[in-house]
Amino acid sequence: MSDLAVNVAWQELLREAAIQNPHTRAIIAPQKWHMQIAESLAKIMLKSERNILENPDLLIIGSLEKAPNIEACRNLIRDIALKPVNADCRLAVILSADKLLTHAANSLLKLAEEPPSYAYLLFLMEDARFFLPTLKSRSRCNILCDFDDEREPEISAKHVPKSDSDWVEWLEQVRKFSAKSESDSGSGKSRKKAKSGSESGSESELGLGLESKPDFLVNELKSWVACAVSDGDFELAAKLENLRVIASERNLSLQMMSDLLILILKDAFVEKFDVANE
Image (cartoon, rainbow, N blue to C red; front, top):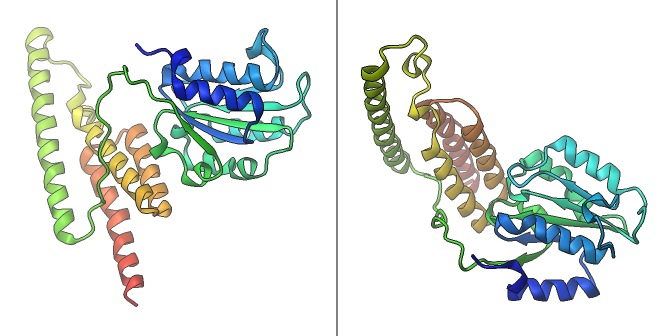
């Protein structure tokens, strides 16, 4: 596994940080490096080597697994406005910045654009495609790659269906995926019943089969978000990201979620097409 300490891009970033830092920086890197990056930059910027995580001028929100919520972002805005305690500046680290919900990310826009003269923001993330574009435009971005890290291929960007025929084709994919999920779920339940007998409150009775967690739609939405960002359609990207969060967190069936997508997105494209042709 590659070591951050010998990463060439990281060494260049450290040299830059020792001389001058932008008030808002975004670093895209493997998650396993995030805390090491935060601590190393904090030691340089706050000019402190000992117990850096306990330094009152270092503010960290979020975690490696979860982005901060809007309340944590608002608290950060309030706290970073205070004068430094021990150092010449204050450093705010936002972990999992690519997982920020839209309203939480939007709350940081003004701070990212006009931070206090003694305040610095550091956004850490794994995937820049899901970092709010308006925050990204206010940040100096650095990419640190781990070439020895074996990962699944990134989801390729593709457009949201637009025409009726596109939606029909997409719905057919959803139908096939749903049928396969139900088949796999049924096979699994049959094996379980053969072993332990029928149980009340089963997944099928509660509607909690494999198809109720629409990973298929989550992946579709990720690819649509990436394409919308690439096309510069940030309004659509934000709408898609909100739908992705709903698909990830709500216990909706695949069919219910696909109906919701069509209800929201198909009408939106019809309206946009009508406006463009007026």
